[in-house]
Amino acid sequence: RVREAIEAAVDEDPAPVEGRYGGWGEDDGTRLWREGVEKFNNFLARNEAQFDGRVKRTANEEVARRYSRVDAARAELIEAFDEDFVKECGYKGVVFDIFNNDLFLKVRPDKEEYTHPTDRNGKRLPNRWTSDRVSKAVAEYKDAVAEATKGVSAALVALSKTVTEVEGGRNAIVDSCRVNLIMSSLFDHVEECLGKGWNGVEIDEEGARVDLKGLYPYWMSKGEAVRNDVKLDGQMALLTAPNMSGKSTVMRSVGAATLLAQCGLLAPVGKGSKVGSFDEIFVRGASSDVPAMGKSAFGAEMEDVKDMLEGCGQGSLVIVDELGRGTSPRDGTAIAAAVLEAMAEKKMTGFFSTHLHGVLELEKEMEEEVRERIRMMRMRADDDGKGSVDWTYNLEDGVCNDSMAIATARRFGLPESVISRAVEMGSSLSMAGKVKEDMDWTVAADAGERDFPAACEALKSATATKPVIVPANMRPPPSLEGQSCVYLLEIPSEDEGGRSRFYVGETDSFSRRIKAHRSKKEEGMKWKDLGAAVSPLNSGGKSHARMIETSLIKKLSKGGFELISKGDEKNSRFAASA
Image (tube, rainbow, N blue to C red; front, side, top):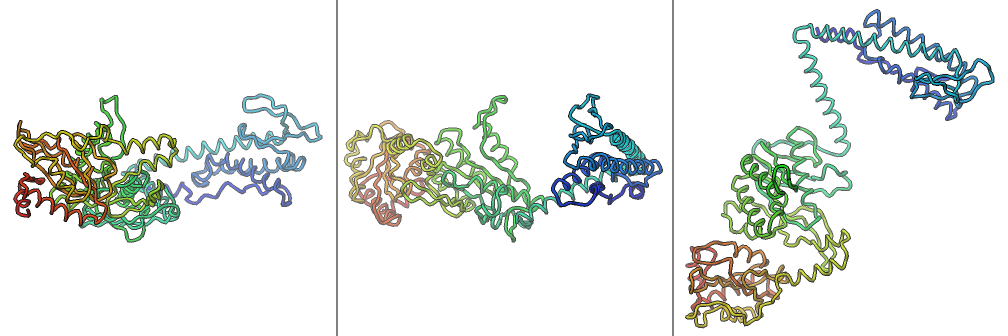
Protein backbone atom coordinates (compact mmCIF):
# COMPACT_ATOMS: atom_id res chain seq x y z
CA ARG A 1 0.00 0.00 0.00
CA VAL A 2 2.87 2.35 0.71
CA ARG A 3 4.43 1.62 -2.66
CA GLU A 4 1.13 2.09 -4.47
CA ALA A 5 0.61 5.48 -2.83
CA ILE A 6 4.12 6.60 -3.76
CA GLU A 7 3.88 5.37 -7.36
CA ALA A 8 0.62 7.25 -7.82
CA ALA A 9 2.17 10.56 -6.75
CA VAL A 10 5.91 10.46 -7.44
CA ASP A 11 7.51 10.48 -10.88
CA GLU A 12 10.49 8.08 -10.76
CA ASP A 13 11.94 9.46 -14.01
CA PRO A 14 11.14 13.19 -14.19
CA ALA A 15 11.96 15.19 -17.30
CA PRO A 16 14.99 17.47 -16.83
CA VAL A 17 14.42 21.20 -16.47
CA GLU A 18 17.44 22.02 -18.61
CA GLY A 19 17.05 22.70 -22.29
CA ARG A 20 13.55 24.23 -22.27
CA TYR A 21 14.80 27.29 -24.08
CA GLY A 22 16.16 26.62 -27.53
CA GLY A 23 17.41 30.11 -28.36
CA TRP A 24 16.28 32.94 -30.57
CA GLY A 25 16.78 32.45 -34.26
CA GLU A 26 19.34 30.13 -35.76
CA ASP A 27 22.51 29.04 -33.97
CA ASP A 28 25.18 31.31 -35.48
CA GLY A 29 27.97 29.15 -34.07
CA THR A 30 29.34 31.91 -31.84
CA ARG A 31 30.25 31.54 -28.19
CA LEU A 32 27.95 34.42 -27.27
CA TRP A 33 24.93 32.64 -28.73
CA ARG A 34 25.67 29.38 -26.93
CA GLU A 35 26.39 31.12 -23.62
CA GLY A 36 23.21 33.19 -23.90
CA VAL A 37 21.06 30.09 -24.42
CA GLU A 38 22.82 28.28 -21.56
CA LYS A 39 22.40 31.19 -19.13
CA PHE A 40 18.67 31.52 -19.84
CA ASN A 41 18.20 27.77 -19.34
CA ASN A 42 20.09 28.05 -16.06
CA PHE A 43 17.72 30.84 -15.01
CA LEU A 44 14.75 28.56 -15.68
CA ALA A 45 16.39 25.56 -13.98
CA ARG A 46 17.23 27.49 -10.80
CA ASN A 47 13.61 28.58 -10.42
CA GLU A 48 11.83 25.36 -11.37
CA ALA A 49 14.16 23.06 -9.42
CA GLN A 50 12.19 24.05 -6.30
CA PHE A 51 9.28 21.84 -7.38
CA ASP A 52 9.92 20.19 -10.72
CA GLY A 53 10.15 16.39 -10.66
CA ARG A 54 9.18 15.99 -7.01
CA VAL A 55 5.73 14.66 -7.82
CA LYS A 56 3.95 13.70 -10.99
CA ARG A 57 2.22 16.49 -12.88
CA THR A 58 -0.94 14.41 -12.55
CA ALA A 59 -0.60 13.78 -8.79
CA ASN A 60 -3.84 15.70 -8.31
CA GLU A 61 -5.90 18.35 -10.10
CA GLU A 62 -4.37 21.25 -8.19
CA VAL A 63 -0.81 20.16 -9.00
CA ALA A 64 -1.72 19.74 -12.66
CA ARG A 65 -3.27 23.25 -12.77
CA ARG A 66 -0.21 24.86 -11.22
CA TYR A 67 2.18 23.01 -13.53
CA SER A 68 0.12 24.28 -16.49
CA ARG A 69 0.33 27.85 -15.21
CA VAL A 70 4.14 27.55 -15.02
CA ASP A 71 4.22 26.23 -18.61
CA ALA A 72 2.16 29.17 -19.86
CA ALA A 73 4.19 31.73 -17.88
CA ARG A 74 7.46 30.24 -19.14
CA ALA A 75 6.27 30.38 -22.76
CA GLU A 76 5.26 34.05 -22.41
CA LEU A 77 8.60 34.88 -20.72
CA ILE A 78 10.58 33.21 -23.52
CA GLU A 79 8.63 35.09 -26.20
CA ALA A 80 9.01 38.44 -24.40
CA PHE A 81 12.73 37.78 -23.73
CA ASP A 82 13.41 37.01 -27.40
CA GLU A 83 11.37 39.91 -28.79
CA ASP A 84 12.31 42.70 -26.37
CA PHE A 85 15.83 41.69 -25.30
CA VAL A 86 17.64 39.39 -27.73
CA LYS A 87 16.15 40.84 -30.91
CA GLU A 88 17.00 44.40 -29.82
CA CYS A 89 20.43 43.95 -28.19
CA GLY A 90 21.54 40.36 -28.79
CA TYR A 91 22.71 38.04 -26.05
CA LYS A 92 25.68 40.32 -25.45
CA GLY A 93 23.44 42.97 -23.90
CA VAL A 94 21.53 40.62 -21.57
CA VAL A 95 22.30 40.39 -17.84
CA PHE A 96 21.18 37.32 -15.81
CA ASP A 97 21.04 38.76 -12.29
CA ILE A 98 21.33 35.81 -9.87
CA PHE A 99 21.01 37.90 -6.72
CA ASN A 100 17.74 39.50 -7.79
CA ASN A 101 16.60 36.43 -9.76
CA ASP A 102 15.76 38.62 -12.75
CA LEU A 103 16.62 39.46 -16.36
CA PHE A 104 17.90 42.87 -17.44
CA LEU A 105 19.61 44.72 -20.27
CA LYS A 106 22.88 46.54 -19.66
CA VAL A 107 22.35 48.84 -22.68
CA ARG A 108 19.21 50.78 -23.58
CA PRO A 109 17.58 50.16 -26.96
CA ASP A 110 16.62 53.31 -28.84
CA LYS A 111 13.02 53.10 -27.69
CA GLU A 112 11.14 55.03 -25.02
CA GLU A 113 9.34 52.02 -23.48
CA TYR A 114 12.57 50.74 -21.83
CA THR A 115 12.97 51.90 -18.22
CA HIS A 116 15.18 51.33 -15.20
CA PRO A 117 14.10 48.27 -13.15
CA THR A 118 14.25 47.88 -9.36
CA ASP A 119 16.03 45.23 -7.31
CA ARG A 120 14.41 42.85 -4.80
CA ASN A 121 14.46 45.61 -2.19
CA GLY A 122 12.70 48.12 -4.43
CA LYS A 123 15.86 50.13 -5.13
CA ARG A 124 16.19 51.60 -8.62
CA LEU A 125 19.02 50.17 -10.78
CA PRO A 126 20.38 53.08 -12.84
CA ASN A 127 22.67 50.90 -15.02
CA ARG A 128 20.05 48.34 -16.01
CA TRP A 129 17.09 48.40 -18.38
CA THR A 130 13.97 46.39 -19.00
CA SER A 131 10.68 46.55 -20.89
CA ASP A 132 7.22 46.53 -19.39
CA ARG A 133 6.42 43.25 -21.17
CA VAL A 134 9.53 41.42 -19.89
CA SER A 135 9.09 42.83 -16.39
CA LYS A 136 5.49 41.58 -16.22
CA ALA A 137 6.45 38.20 -17.77
CA VAL A 138 9.21 37.66 -15.18
CA ALA A 139 6.85 38.60 -12.33
CA GLU A 140 4.14 36.24 -13.60
CA TYR A 141 6.68 33.43 -14.10
CA LYS A 142 8.11 33.78 -10.58
CA ASP A 143 4.60 33.90 -9.08
CA ALA A 144 3.61 30.74 -11.00
CA VAL A 145 6.77 28.99 -9.77
CA ALA A 146 6.02 29.96 -6.17
CA GLU A 147 2.45 28.68 -6.51
CA ALA A 148 3.64 25.40 -8.04
CA THR A 149 6.18 24.95 -5.23
CA LYS A 150 3.44 25.32 -2.63
CA GLY A 151 1.18 22.89 -4.53
CA VAL A 152 3.90 20.25 -4.77
CA SER A 153 4.73 20.66 -1.05
CA ALA A 154 1.06 20.19 -0.19
CA ALA A 155 0.95 17.04 -2.34
CA LEU A 156 3.99 15.65 -0.53
CA VAL A 157 2.43 16.40 2.86
CA ALA A 158 -0.72 14.58 1.77
CA LEU A 159 1.39 11.65 0.56
CA SER A 160 3.22 11.51 3.91
CA LYS A 161 -0.10 11.46 5.76
CA THR A 162 -1.36 8.65 3.54
CA VAL A 163 1.78 6.61 4.07
CA THR A 164 1.83 7.02 7.85
CA GLU A 165 -1.81 6.00 8.09
CA VAL A 166 -0.91 2.61 6.61
CA GLU A 167 -0.01 0.12 9.35
CA GLY A 168 3.78 -0.15 9.40
CA GLY A 169 4.07 2.51 6.72
CA ARG A 170 6.36 4.79 8.69
CA ASN A 171 8.79 1.94 9.42
CA ALA A 172 8.71 0.87 5.79
CA ILE A 173 9.73 4.34 4.69
CA VAL A 174 12.51 4.63 7.29
CA ASP A 175 13.89 1.18 6.43
CA SER A 176 13.75 1.95 2.73
CA CYS A 177 15.66 5.18 3.30
CA ARG A 178 18.32 3.31 5.26
CA VAL A 179 18.71 0.66 2.59
CA ASN A 180 18.84 3.34 -0.09
CA LEU A 181 21.52 5.26 1.80
CA ILE A 182 23.61 2.13 2.32
CA MET A 183 23.27 0.93 -1.26
CA SER A 184 23.97 4.35 -2.76
CA SER A 185 27.05 4.69 -0.53
CA LEU A 186 28.24 1.23 -1.59
CA PHE A 187 27.67 2.13 -5.22
CA ASP A 188 29.76 5.30 -4.86
CA HIS A 189 32.46 3.36 -2.96
CA VAL A 190 32.74 0.64 -5.61
CA GLU A 191 32.68 3.12 -8.49
CA GLU A 192 35.44 5.24 -6.92
CA CYS A 193 37.64 2.37 -5.72
CA LEU A 194 37.49 0.29 -8.90
CA GLY A 195 38.79 3.35 -10.69
CA LYS A 196 41.72 3.42 -8.27
CA GLY A 197 42.51 -0.27 -8.79
CA TRP A 198 41.37 -1.44 -5.35
CA ASN A 199 40.23 -5.03 -4.83
CA GLY A 200 38.08 -7.10 -2.53
CA VAL A 201 39.66 -8.99 0.38
CA GLU A 202 38.57 -12.49 1.33
CA ILE A 203 37.68 -13.01 5.00
CA ASP A 204 39.34 -16.13 6.41
CA GLU A 205 37.22 -17.49 9.22
CA GLU A 206 39.85 -20.08 10.19
CA GLY A 207 42.17 -17.85 12.17
CA ALA A 208 43.64 -14.41 12.91
CA ARG A 209 45.98 -13.89 9.99
CA VAL A 210 46.94 -11.19 7.52
CA ASP A 211 47.86 -11.90 3.90
CA LEU A 212 47.72 -8.63 1.95
CA LYS A 213 49.25 -8.63 -1.50
CA GLY A 214 50.45 -5.43 -3.11
CA LEU A 215 49.32 -3.25 -0.18
CA TYR A 216 49.75 0.50 -0.54
CA PRO A 217 48.59 3.59 1.44
CA TYR A 218 44.94 4.44 0.82
CA TRP A 219 45.73 8.15 0.53
CA MET A 220 48.16 7.61 -2.37
CA SER A 221 47.54 6.71 -5.98
CA LYS A 222 48.44 3.24 -7.19
CA GLY A 223 51.07 4.61 -9.55
CA GLU A 224 53.11 6.65 -7.06
CA ALA A 225 53.01 4.26 -4.08
CA VAL A 226 55.49 1.49 -3.23
CA ARG A 227 53.53 -1.74 -2.82
CA ASN A 228 54.30 -4.33 -0.15
CA ASP A 229 53.22 -7.90 0.51
CA VAL A 230 52.33 -8.28 4.20
CA LYS A 231 51.84 -11.74 5.68
CA LEU A 232 51.40 -12.53 9.38
CA ASP A 233 50.15 -15.93 10.43
CA GLY A 234 49.04 -15.17 13.98
CA GLN A 235 52.34 -13.40 14.77
CA MET A 236 53.47 -10.11 16.23
CA ALA A 237 55.94 -8.39 13.92
CA LEU A 238 58.68 -6.52 15.78
CA LEU A 239 59.33 -3.78 13.22
CA THR A 240 62.56 -1.79 13.28
CA ALA A 241 63.47 0.76 10.66
CA PRO A 242 65.33 4.01 10.01
CA ASN A 243 63.52 7.30 10.36
CA MET A 244 61.39 8.24 7.35
CA SER A 245 61.50 4.68 5.98
CA GLY A 246 57.71 4.23 5.97
CA LYS A 247 57.11 1.87 8.89
CA SER A 248 54.22 3.91 10.33
CA THR A 249 52.72 4.22 6.85
CA VAL A 250 52.84 0.46 6.31
CA MET A 251 51.23 -0.22 9.70
CA ARG A 252 48.45 2.31 9.13
CA SER A 253 47.85 0.80 5.69
CA VAL A 254 47.53 -2.68 7.20
CA GLY A 255 45.03 -1.41 9.76
CA ALA A 256 42.99 0.50 7.17
CA ALA A 257 42.91 -2.37 4.65
CA THR A 258 41.89 -4.85 7.35
CA LEU A 259 39.13 -2.55 8.61
CA LEU A 260 37.81 -2.05 5.07
CA ALA A 261 37.86 -5.82 4.54
CA GLN A 262 35.93 -6.44 7.78
CA CYS A 263 33.26 -4.03 6.48
CA GLY A 264 33.00 -5.85 3.16
CA LEU A 265 34.54 -2.96 1.24
CA LEU A 266 37.29 -2.77 -1.36
CA ALA A 267 40.82 -2.03 -0.15
CA PRO A 268 44.10 -0.79 -1.72
CA VAL A 269 45.51 -4.30 -2.21
CA GLY A 270 46.08 -6.77 -5.02
CA LYS A 271 43.86 -9.69 -5.93
CA GLY A 272 44.00 -12.80 -3.76
CA SER A 273 44.41 -10.92 -0.46
CA LYS A 274 42.99 -12.46 2.72
CA VAL A 275 42.56 -11.41 6.34
CA GLY A 276 41.15 -13.13 9.38
CA SER A 277 37.85 -12.26 10.99
CA PHE A 278 39.21 -10.06 13.79
CA ASP A 279 37.14 -9.22 16.86
CA GLU A 280 39.19 -6.10 17.60
CA ILE A 281 41.37 -3.74 15.56
CA PHE A 282 43.51 -1.64 17.91
CA VAL A 283 45.89 1.05 16.64
CA ARG A 284 48.15 2.99 19.02
CA GLY A 285 50.27 5.73 17.46
CA ALA A 286 51.76 9.03 18.58
CA SER A 287 50.00 10.88 21.37
CA SER A 288 50.05 14.19 23.18
CA ASP A 289 49.41 15.16 26.76
CA VAL A 290 45.92 15.76 28.15
CA PRO A 291 46.38 18.51 30.77
CA ALA A 292 42.66 18.78 31.50
CA MET A 293 42.68 15.17 32.69
CA GLY A 294 46.05 15.36 34.42
CA LYS A 295 47.79 13.07 31.93
CA SER A 296 51.20 13.44 30.37
CA ALA A 297 51.76 12.02 26.90
CA PHE A 298 53.40 8.97 28.44
CA GLY A 299 50.58 8.58 30.94
CA ALA A 300 47.97 8.69 28.18
CA GLU A 301 50.02 6.14 26.26
CA MET A 302 50.18 3.76 29.22
CA GLU A 303 46.42 4.04 29.78
CA ASP A 304 45.79 3.08 26.15
CA VAL A 305 48.16 0.14 26.45
CA LYS A 306 46.34 -0.99 29.58
CA ASP A 307 43.04 -0.93 27.66
CA MET A 308 44.68 -2.86 24.84
CA LEU A 309 46.03 -5.58 27.10
CA GLU A 310 42.65 -5.91 28.84
CA GLY A 311 40.50 -5.89 25.72
CA CYS A 312 42.52 -7.59 22.99
CA GLY A 313 43.51 -11.22 22.60
CA GLN A 314 44.07 -14.03 20.13
CA GLY A 315 41.42 -12.77 17.72
CA SER A 316 42.68 -9.17 17.64
CA LEU A 317 44.73 -7.18 15.18
CA VAL A 318 46.94 -4.80 17.19
CA ILE A 319 49.25 -2.07 15.87
CA VAL A 320 51.51 -0.25 18.34
CA ASP A 321 53.84 2.42 16.97
CA GLU A 322 56.96 3.45 18.94
CA LEU A 323 55.82 2.73 22.47
CA GLY A 324 57.88 4.29 25.27
CA ARG A 325 59.11 7.46 23.56
CA GLY A 326 57.89 9.72 26.35
CA THR A 327 60.24 8.50 29.08
CA SER A 328 63.90 7.60 29.59
CA PRO A 329 65.40 5.23 26.99
CA ARG A 330 66.14 2.64 29.68
CA ASP A 331 62.65 2.57 31.15
CA GLY A 332 61.01 2.96 27.76
CA THR A 333 62.95 -0.01 26.41
CA ALA A 334 62.06 -2.17 29.38
CA ILE A 335 58.36 -1.28 29.21
CA ALA A 336 58.22 -1.73 25.44
CA ALA A 337 59.80 -5.18 25.68
CA ALA A 338 57.46 -6.22 28.49
CA VAL A 339 54.39 -5.05 26.54
CA LEU A 340 55.56 -6.86 23.42
CA GLU A 341 56.05 -10.02 25.46
CA ALA A 342 52.54 -9.70 26.93
CA MET A 343 51.05 -9.20 23.46
CA ALA A 344 52.81 -12.30 22.17
CA GLU A 345 51.72 -14.30 25.22
CA LYS A 346 48.10 -13.30 24.51
CA LYS A 347 48.64 -14.49 20.90
CA MET A 348 47.73 -11.18 19.30
CA THR A 349 48.44 -10.54 15.62
CA GLY A 350 49.91 -7.27 14.38
CA PHE A 351 52.86 -4.89 14.42
CA PHE A 352 55.01 -3.46 17.19
CA SER A 353 57.48 -0.84 15.94
CA THR A 354 60.31 0.75 17.87
CA HIS A 355 63.50 2.82 17.65
CA LEU A 356 64.52 1.50 21.08
CA HIS A 357 66.87 -1.15 19.78
CA GLY A 358 67.41 -2.58 23.25
CA VAL A 359 64.03 -4.29 22.76
CA LEU A 360 65.76 -6.55 20.24
CA GLU A 361 68.17 -7.71 22.90
CA LEU A 362 65.51 -8.10 25.59
CA GLU A 363 63.48 -10.21 23.21
CA LYS A 364 66.17 -12.85 23.62
CA GLU A 365 65.32 -13.01 27.32
CA MET A 366 61.76 -14.18 26.61
CA GLU A 367 60.53 -17.75 26.72
CA GLU A 368 61.06 -19.75 23.55
CA GLU A 369 57.33 -20.21 23.01
CA VAL A 370 56.84 -16.44 23.16
CA ARG A 371 59.79 -15.74 20.86
CA GLU A 372 58.34 -18.07 18.23
CA ARG A 373 55.33 -15.78 17.99
CA ILE A 374 57.49 -12.69 17.35
CA ARG A 375 58.68 -12.11 13.79
CA MET A 376 61.55 -9.73 13.13
CA MET A 377 60.78 -7.32 10.28
CA ARG A 378 62.29 -4.10 9.01
CA MET A 379 61.94 -1.39 6.37
CA ARG A 380 64.89 -1.57 4.03
CA ALA A 381 67.01 1.53 3.54
CA ASP A 382 70.27 1.48 1.59
CA ASP A 383 73.14 3.50 3.08
CA ASP A 384 76.10 4.26 0.81
CA GLY A 385 78.32 4.83 3.85
CA LYS A 386 78.85 8.50 2.92
CA GLY A 387 75.80 9.95 4.62
CA SER A 388 73.38 9.37 1.76
CA VAL A 389 70.43 7.05 2.33
CA ASP A 390 68.03 5.54 -0.20
CA TRP A 391 64.66 4.96 1.47
CA THR A 392 63.13 2.06 -0.47
CA TYR A 393 59.89 1.82 1.59
CA ASN A 394 60.07 -1.97 1.21
CA LEU A 395 59.02 -4.24 4.08
CA GLU A 396 61.17 -7.33 4.60
CA ASP A 397 62.26 -9.82 7.23
CA GLY A 398 65.23 -8.78 9.34
CA VAL A 399 66.45 -6.30 11.94
CA CYS A 400 67.50 -2.67 11.62
CA ASN A 401 70.03 -1.42 14.18
CA ASP A 402 70.44 2.12 12.81
CA SER A 403 67.69 4.75 12.87
CA MET A 404 69.78 6.95 10.51
CA ALA A 405 68.66 10.06 12.36
CA ILE A 406 71.63 12.12 11.15
CA ALA A 407 70.81 11.40 7.48
CA THR A 408 67.15 12.26 8.09
CA ALA A 409 68.07 15.52 9.84
CA ARG A 410 70.31 16.46 6.92
CA ARG A 411 67.53 15.66 4.44
CA PHE A 412 65.16 18.05 6.18
CA GLY A 413 67.57 20.95 6.31
CA LEU A 414 69.06 20.89 9.80
CA PRO A 415 72.08 23.27 9.62
CA GLU A 416 75.25 21.45 8.65
CA SER A 417 77.10 22.99 11.60
CA VAL A 418 74.59 21.38 13.97
CA ILE A 419 74.81 18.05 12.15
CA SER A 420 78.61 18.06 12.30
CA ARG A 421 78.50 18.80 16.00
CA ALA A 422 75.97 16.03 16.53
CA VAL A 423 78.30 13.57 14.81
CA GLU A 424 81.17 14.68 17.07
CA MET A 425 79.06 14.39 20.21
CA GLY A 426 77.78 10.99 19.15
CA SER A 427 81.31 9.72 18.75
CA SER A 428 82.24 10.80 22.24
CA LEU A 429 78.91 9.99 23.88
CA SER A 430 79.46 8.20 27.17
CA MET A 431 83.24 8.45 26.68
CA ALA A 432 83.70 11.67 28.67
CA GLY A 433 86.34 11.15 31.31
CA LYS A 434 87.72 8.22 29.38
CA VAL A 435 88.92 5.56 31.76
CA LYS A 436 92.61 4.85 31.87
CA GLU A 437 93.66 1.31 31.14
CA ASP A 438 95.05 0.92 34.64
CA MET A 439 91.91 2.28 36.44
CA ASP A 440 91.33 1.09 40.00
CA TRP A 441 88.76 -1.74 39.75
CA THR A 442 87.41 -2.93 43.09
CA VAL A 443 88.31 -6.58 43.68
CA ALA A 444 88.64 -8.76 46.73
CA ALA A 445 91.97 -8.63 48.48
CA ASP A 446 92.39 -12.35 48.24
CA ALA A 447 91.60 -12.53 44.55
CA GLY A 448 95.25 -12.68 43.66
CA GLU A 449 95.61 -12.47 39.89
CA ARG A 450 92.06 -13.60 39.29
CA ASP A 451 90.85 -10.00 39.04
CA PHE A 452 89.46 -7.88 36.21
CA PRO A 453 92.83 -6.63 34.85
CA ALA A 454 94.02 -10.22 34.63
CA ALA A 455 90.83 -11.25 32.84
CA CYS A 456 91.30 -8.32 30.45
CA GLU A 457 94.79 -9.56 29.62
CA ALA A 458 93.30 -12.97 28.80
CA LEU A 459 90.74 -11.25 26.52
CA LYS A 460 93.50 -9.26 24.83
CA SER A 461 95.51 -12.44 24.30
CA ALA A 462 92.52 -14.33 22.87
CA THR A 463 91.49 -11.61 20.40
CA ALA A 464 94.88 -10.04 19.66
CA THR A 465 93.08 -6.72 20.19
CA LYS A 466 93.41 -4.19 22.97
CA PRO A 467 90.05 -4.16 24.81
CA VAL A 468 87.91 -1.05 25.12
CA ILE A 469 87.11 -0.47 28.80
CA VAL A 470 83.50 0.45 29.67
CA PRO A 471 83.19 1.22 33.39
CA ALA A 472 80.06 0.95 35.50
CA ASN A 473 77.21 3.34 34.61
CA MET A 474 78.94 4.30 31.36
CA ARG A 475 77.63 3.62 27.86
CA PRO A 476 79.88 1.98 25.27
CA PRO A 477 81.18 4.05 22.34
CA PRO A 478 79.08 3.91 19.13
CA SER A 479 82.14 2.68 17.24
CA LEU A 480 81.48 -0.81 18.65
CA GLU A 481 78.13 -1.07 16.84
CA GLY A 482 77.73 -3.10 13.68
CA GLN A 483 80.72 -5.43 14.17
CA SER A 484 81.32 -8.69 15.94
CA CYS A 485 82.78 -8.32 19.43
CA VAL A 486 83.88 -10.56 22.29
CA TYR A 487 83.26 -9.03 25.68
CA LEU A 488 84.06 -9.65 29.33
CA LEU A 489 81.86 -8.46 32.23
CA GLU A 490 82.78 -8.01 35.88
CA ILE A 491 79.65 -8.21 38.08
CA PRO A 492 80.24 -6.96 41.65
CA SER A 493 78.84 -8.81 44.62
CA GLU A 494 76.14 -7.22 46.79
CA ASP A 495 77.96 -8.50 49.87
CA GLU A 496 80.57 -6.16 51.25
CA GLY A 497 83.93 -7.73 50.56
CA GLY A 498 82.34 -10.38 48.35
CA ARG A 499 84.09 -11.52 45.20
CA SER A 500 83.12 -10.26 41.79
CA ARG A 501 82.09 -12.78 39.15
CA PHE A 502 82.73 -12.74 35.41
CA TYR A 503 80.72 -13.26 32.27
CA VAL A 504 82.04 -13.88 28.73
CA GLY A 505 79.91 -13.31 25.64
CA GLU A 506 79.85 -12.27 21.99
CA THR A 507 77.51 -9.97 20.06
CA ASP A 508 77.07 -7.79 17.00
CA SER A 509 75.50 -4.99 19.05
CA PHE A 510 77.26 -4.46 22.34
CA SER A 511 75.25 -1.40 23.33
CA ARG A 512 72.01 -3.39 23.33
CA ARG A 513 73.63 -6.40 24.98
CA ILE A 514 75.08 -4.42 27.89
CA LYS A 515 71.72 -2.72 28.46
CA ALA A 516 70.12 -6.14 28.75
CA HIS A 517 72.79 -7.33 31.20
CA ARG A 518 72.49 -4.23 33.36
CA SER A 519 68.73 -4.71 33.62
CA LYS A 520 69.07 -8.20 35.11
CA LYS A 521 68.26 -8.87 38.72
CA GLU A 522 69.94 -11.76 40.49
CA GLU A 523 70.22 -12.21 44.22
CA GLY A 524 73.70 -11.48 45.48
CA MET A 525 74.93 -9.78 42.27
CA LYS A 526 74.88 -6.07 41.28
CA TRP A 527 74.31 -6.38 37.53
CA LYS A 528 73.49 -2.68 37.20
CA ASP A 529 77.02 -1.80 38.38
CA LEU A 530 78.91 -4.15 36.07
CA GLY A 531 81.98 -3.02 34.16
CA ALA A 532 83.05 -4.36 30.79
CA ALA A 533 85.96 -4.89 28.46
CA VAL A 534 85.17 -5.26 24.76
CA SER A 535 87.38 -6.43 21.90
CA PRO A 536 86.01 -5.79 18.39
CA LEU A 537 87.06 -8.32 15.75
CA ASN A 538 88.40 -7.10 12.43
CA SER A 539 87.52 -10.29 10.55
CA GLY A 540 85.84 -13.66 10.85
CA GLY A 541 82.39 -12.41 11.81
CA LYS A 542 80.05 -14.06 14.29
CA SER A 543 81.34 -17.62 13.90
CA HIS A 544 84.88 -16.50 14.71
CA ALA A 545 83.59 -14.55 17.72
CA ARG A 546 81.87 -17.66 19.08
CA MET A 547 85.07 -19.68 18.75
CA ILE A 548 86.99 -17.05 20.71
CA GLU A 549 84.20 -16.88 23.30
CA THR A 550 84.40 -20.64 23.88
CA SER A 551 88.19 -20.57 24.05
CA LEU A 552 88.22 -17.68 26.54
CA ILE A 553 85.63 -19.35 28.78
CA LYS A 554 87.83 -22.45 28.95
CA LYS A 555 90.94 -20.41 29.69
CA LEU A 556 89.36 -18.36 32.47
CA SER A 557 87.67 -21.40 34.02
CA LYS A 558 90.95 -23.28 34.17
CA GLY A 559 92.59 -20.18 35.65
CA GLY A 560 90.16 -20.21 38.57
CA PHE A 561 87.96 -17.28 37.57
CA GLU A 562 84.40 -17.60 38.83
CA LEU A 563 82.20 -17.46 35.71
CA ILE A 564 78.43 -17.11 35.42
CA SER A 565 75.95 -17.01 32.55
CA LYS A 566 72.50 -15.40 32.37
CA GLY A 567 70.95 -18.15 34.50
CA ASP A 568 72.19 -20.30 37.36
CA GLU A 569 71.06 -23.37 35.49
CA LYS A 570 73.69 -22.68 32.87
CA ASN A 571 76.65 -22.46 35.21
CA SER A 572 77.16 -26.21 35.08
CA ARG A 573 77.07 -26.12 31.30
CA PHE A 574 79.81 -23.50 31.30
CA ALA A 575 81.89 -25.55 33.69
CA ALA A 576 81.41 -28.68 31.64
CA SER A 577 82.35 -26.92 28.42
CA ALA A 578 85.42 -25.58 30.13
